[in-house]
Every structure is written in structure tokens, then in C-alpha cells.
Image (cartoon, rainbow over all chains, first blue to last red; front, side, top):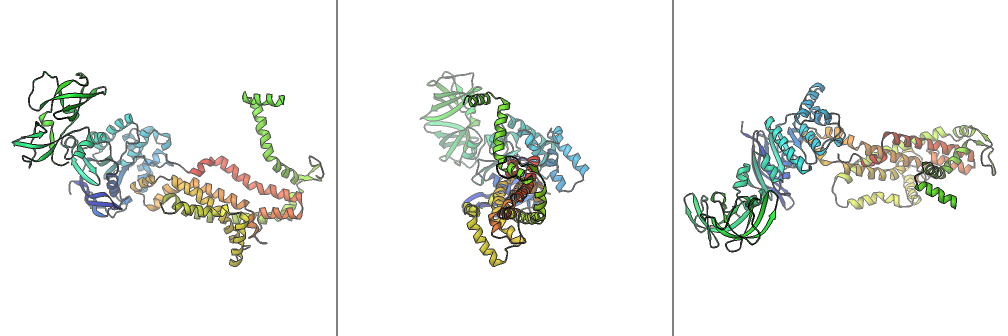
Length: 357
Length: 278
């Protein structure tokens, strides 16, 4: 008995010259909620379809619960799936939609009714059994989709951008609802999305894909705070990038030269003096100081170029050093006008160096 | 003139009664020829410039049935219609699936080719059909006349069912698969119920076209395969206007029945599109 519930082993899928999945290897642990995150066309949907069986990989194998399912037809894979466009059966009532997987499995009427009622309770749609999908709102339809996917207790729950067709407010609400239901049932779930907010809020782990390859796999914290590539950093949120070269390594920290400035950042393993690195820093992590405030490590003079009022925060475009642009977001309490001279501090532990572009 | 202006002003003001009189006159205009035939089929001694028949009778219907052999002719018409509907629907399902679900090169050209027979003048097309059928010995057989009708019915069936299959959501089928349904169960529990309105629409279209088809029948029928439109046409040639009228009225009845059925069972526009999405 392995810990792996889903495993992609070296999965490759080509569409003509396009590599949709390029030797994708990924393991999803039992009971884990894993998000496959990436821009459209990155291959995340292809990966999901390799798992459902709607796409057959050109190379590599797919495992569910230790069994090789690569050659198994979809209907024998024991999956539950929630679709972006809900994909409910329009000619069936909510009751029959949710009961469909049970009917296919020849469960008795009584057993079916009991489990449908239970599933509908789980998604808080008790009173809607006799409704048709078209009579429900988008959010309700998607909850029916969730109930249908869960009703026969599949080994794995797949969610294919389940919230993209809902409006922003409902999306937020449903996000927590899905998370809660999945956690309560302890089911292994693979969630596919292009929305990094959803990925961070929902997942135990996030796998970021780009051009058919995995860029990084990690917890939301790891992904957000310690991206391993520029792509991950940019995809997961606003970022500042500063190019430089390592001046000296001193135990836990190292000094990186950016133009004429020296920045102290946490050291990277296997990185020595002279090597080019890319410093990455979230705009919300830069501290804005007044010109008179005391200096210190990583404190530099800067000038405000442009400000944008965002309500709870203010977005500053600064320049420092030799015309280095820097984006900073702070709360709206301290305000600086364009042209103002300020001081910035780049918190040492927030500056994350990476070697790959 | 002043009366007309007052009438139009009344319409503009939304006078219900005025609107109804206008509608009624329009309907009467469209229905007038049919009313004429209906009246003629029950009128006796109605000659010259009389506006109404002096005497009413059902005698012409008896003549139509006995001399015109209407029951036999009706049977022919229905058998031919059923064969034509069955063949067209099967063709429509397969071709509609291909047109509606598959991406293939030259799809538009193929579709145009299928619709081409409807663009050629019917009599030209029918002459070609007749020539082929004489060679194949299909003239004056139920199958032959029905196949000739299929050339008219099938394009409609294909059009309607292509639209139906196009409206079928691929992901709904995918969902059924994920839910555990194999190909057969997917077809019977999901595909079939969803395309049923399209199939019904296509069958109704096909039947109506076969039932009313004249030109193609004229060149492929024989003594054993006289259909209602042909029988009526021949009766006109014989010069018995009253009996012809009775036949014409009988001929309308099944169409009315179908119309009533559609009106009651479903909205026609829903039949054509199938269930589009959710």
C-alpha cells in the first residue's frame, strides 16, 4: 500500500508539433487536495484528461490507487468529476442527476434515494431534488455537480475549473464550500485551475505547470514565498525582479551586487561569488521609510514616480539605484506624492534569490 | 378613406376588436381556397355564379372512397411515408452525427452536395430518378417510391439532426463516462433522450414531405403505388370537381392531425434545436 493515490509517471502527450504534456511526473498523496495551476494552454487540462481517460498519453503511465489505469476506459476508473460548465444532464431532475452514477452501478431504488438525499444534504440542496438543472442558479448547478461527483464515494475527485463560470462573489463562497466538503470526506482531490487565488486558498499542495512541464510543486506557502523560477513568481502574484551577481557568501547570508548597490539576502546552496542571480521580492514586502528614518541593512534612497490608489493599499512605482524600477504596495496610512524622496528597506529574509531565469 | 384612417387609428390605440377583425380577414384570405374546396366537397348542384351550394351532401365522399379507392391509396401513401421516414431518419442520425460532432475536411462542400438535389428543379431531378429506377426495376414498388421521397426527406433530416448533434454538449457525455456509464449506457440514458426532440422533428418533417411529394411520385408511381396527391391530380384530369374536392379534404386531415400533435406536445422551435446546454 503506497501513499500515492494518483501518479503520473513520465506522461507525454503530443498534438502535432505541440507538446501538451512533456514527461510529466507527479504524485498526489492519499487524502490530499492538489491543485494543477497554470495559464491556459499549459497542459493542465490534457493531464486531467489523461487521468479521466479521455486522452491517451503517447508515452508514460497513469496510476490510480496503485493500479495502472492507462489502458482502462473512463467508465471503469471510478472517478468523480466536477466540470467547468457543470455538464449536468439537462433532461434529468437534480435527483436523477445525482443518482445517475448509482443507477449505472445498479443500486436499489431505496439505497439510491438514501444516498442521493445524503449527497444533497452535503451540498445544502435538500429542497431541490425535483428541480431541473435549468431552473437552478450557476452556484446551485455546480453544487449538484459536486453532489453527483461524490455520491458514489469515488477514489478520486477531479475538479476542472469548477468556479470559472461563477461570478466573483459566489466563487469565493464556493471555494470554501468545496474545501470544506473535500476535507470532511477526506477524499483525494485534483483541482485544475488558472486562478492562483483559488490555488493558494484551497490546496494542500500546488503544482504549477508551464508549456507542458511542471515548474514547481509545493505547499501554497512554498510556492508563494520561495518560487523557484521567474515564471512561478510572476504567475502566483505581483513581483519585483532585480538582476545581480553574488559578491560574497557569508554563512547564512550573501551579498548581491545590483548595479552599485549591495543587497544582503539569504544564501543559496551551491551558489558562490561571481554567479548571476535573480532577486525576487513581493511589492507588499518592501518597507517605505521617511527620508529622515535611520538607515541600516538593505536601506536605499528612492524616488516616487507614480502612485495608484487601490482603496486598502497604495501602489507605488519607485526608482532606486541606477534607475532600477520597483513596485511597492503599502497600506494607505502613509502617503507620498509623485516626486517625493523616500527610503526603502528590502527586508533581508523576504528577498529571495534564484538562479534560474 | 376616412373610415380606413379611423380604423387604423383604432388599431394604433390598441383597440382589441379592430385588431381581431384585421387578423380574421387575413386568416380568411389565406384559408379562402381551402374553404372553397371544403364547401365544394359537400355541395350539390353548385353551378354557375351561385355563391353558395343550393344543397348539401356527403355523396362525393362516398364516391371518393368507392370509386376513387381512397382507403387503398391512403394505405399506399402511409406505407411509403413510413419507409421514407425510417430510411431518412437512419441516414439523418448517422450523417447528422458526422456533421454535428466531427471535424472533417470539406464538411461545407459535403453539406452543399447533400442539399444540391433541392436546388435542382424537381422535375429535372425526378426525370433522372425515373431513368435510374426503370433500369433497377424500382418503379411502381413501395420501396422505389419511398426511396425517391428519401432524396427529398433525407436532406431535411440531416439538417435537423446535424443541428441537434451540434447542440449536444461533449462534456455532458464525458460526465456520463466519468460517472461510470459505458458507451451503450451513455447512448441510451444520455444521448438518446437529448436528441429525441431532434429525431421527432426530423421524422415529422420527413413524413410531411413524403406525404405531400408530387413530382417525384409522378415519375415513379404505377398502378400499385398511387398516392393521395397523385390520385387527386388524376381525378382533376377526369373532370370530377366535387369528388376531387372531397379527396383534397381527406388529404388535409392527417396534416391537421400532425399539426395538432406538434402544437400540443412541444413547441416546434424547441424540436429543431434540441436541448441546447442547460
